[in-house]
Image (cartoon, rainbow, N blue to C red; front, side):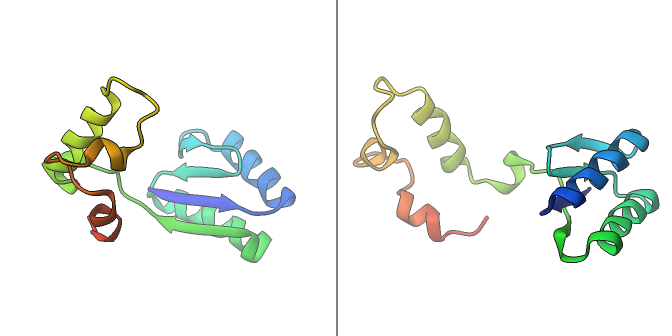
Length: 112
């Protein structure tokens, strides 16, 4: 997919118009950003926005996030356990202390 992010009012207006005119190419719209199908038409629309608005338009190529492939089991397990905690106000670092759950500092520096 192509992620198009706009940084000016004029670019947002053009993005909105493009999305309305080409609904079949738009995967999802987020106000000042949109996901377009990774097709020649999607690329054309994204590049058209950049040609018109220059640096007020950012284009990134993305791919869906597969948590089961990209994230280690302990991290997924910790996320589920943390959301099921008894006290919602407990910060994760305190929740994970003394358990097998990953340390937040270690996770901060670990690439997926």
